[in-house]
Image 1 (cartoon, rainbow, N blue to C red):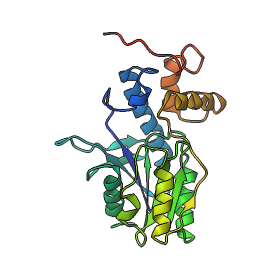
Image 2 (image 1 turned 180 degrees about the vertical axis):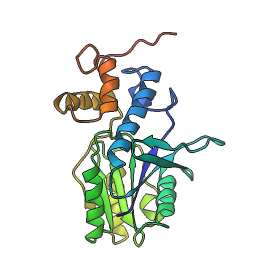
Image 3 (image 1 turned 45 degrees about the vertical axis):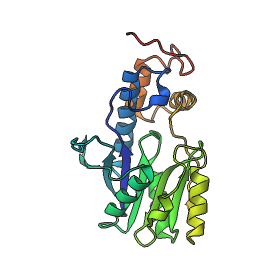
Image 4 (image 1 turned 90 degrees about the horizontal axis):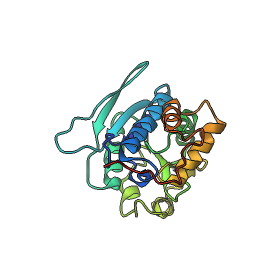
Length: 236
């Protein structure tokens, strides 16, 4: 195997996931869509030439679930640490004990293709110390590095959940003497505008994201009966 890929995710609890989509979706729909995103991403990545694990953000006492696939089961692990930066560092550091090359993605990018992750590993194999996948919102959808270059400084004092995440991380890496390689820009799905963009892409690409497509079709987004720009009325 070329390395290890961690998918950072959360259990699908209504009101706790995809909260910026609540309004366009009900809390229950947002939770279902989150799990559809995760399922599509796992299905896509499970056939890759890398170890795949799910890193779950869990409450105290919760057990990290595994995820079944047609070809086996993807193991789960609990995220460790306080804040996203420490959680990324600790997860990658644990993966690097068994693999020379390590990468992490979130579950907010359901259209992420396996060959994009393979490209990240290829760039590391070619000598890049760090690989970043820029996101349209100013963050990044993927970070990858090698055991040799992995350092917690890459993830410290980053203004997470702002449009300065990528910029700050690039500056941090360069300050450490690590020039990152960049993948083509991608789009997370966090806001109603992001969801509208995804709907357009799914209409154009019927091969993408079958679980996500099924949910959005059932709710009327693909045929235009609903729009992410319209607020949903939640029954009390």
